Image (cartoon, rainbow, N blue to C red; front, side, top):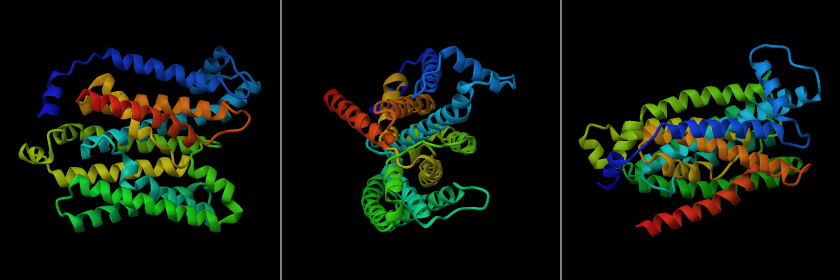
Length: 347
C-alpha cells in the first residue's frame, strides 16, 4: 500500500514539463551545432526554421550538413531515446520491478538477432535498402515475445512477473550467444555487424525518422492510454484485479506494444542499452510514480540522455565515432549503481 499512498501524496508542477521541453530544445540545437564542422547557433536555427516553413535556405556548406546529415540523425536519436525510455517506464510499472525494461523481456535481443541475420544474409526489400532489416527485426521481436510468453504461460498460467523476467533473462543470454555465432560465420561483415550490435545512428535518413515518429505516436499513445492500469499494478496484481483491471489483457497489450516499439528502434539503430533501464528512474525523481506524468517525463528524459550520448560518441574521439551503446552502457551503469544505492539506503 506504500506505492498507492505515494501516488496520492505526490506534488507536481507543470513547470517541470516546461523545463524539460526547454532542455530538450537546446540539447537538440547543441547536437546539430557541434561536430567535426562547428556551425553557429544562428545558422542552425535559421536553416531549420526556414526548412520547416518552406522558406528559402541560404545555399552553403552549413545547409547540407544541417539538413542532410545532422538534422535527420538528431531527430532519430530524439525519437529513439524517447521510445526506449517510455518502454522501460511501462515495463517497470507493469512488472513492478526497477530492473525491468524492454530488454529484460528479451525483445531487444530477439530484434537484434533478426537484424543481424538480415545484414549477414543481405535480405532486402525492393525499393527500400533498410526494409529487410526492419521487417526481419520486427518479426523476430514478435517471435521472441510469443516464445517468452508461451514458456512463461507453460510454467505459470497466471503469467507472474517473476516467471516472465526469469525467462526473458535466460532468453537474452541465449540470443547473445547466437548473435556471436552469426557474426563469427559472417566474416565478410564482421566489422559492420559488431559495430551495429553496439548501436549506431550513422547514416540515418528522413524515411527512418518518419517510421520512428509513427511508431512512437501509435505505440506511445497506447502506453499512455493504459497509464491508469499501470498505476493499478503499483498496488499489486491481485488488488488490480479487485478494482476491475483485466490483468492478463493489459499485460499482453503492453508487452506487444513495447515489442513493436523496441523492434523498430533496434532495426534502425542497433542495440542501445540502459536508456529504458535508467531514465525512467530519473523521470520518477522529477515527477513522481504516477504513470500519467511519469510516461511523458520519461519521453523527455530518454531523448535528452540519448542525444547527449550520441554527441559524446561522435565527438570524443573525432573523427572516429564510438558505438553509442558503449557510451550509454558506461554512463548508464554508473548512474544505475548510484540510483540503486540511494533506493536501498532510503529503505
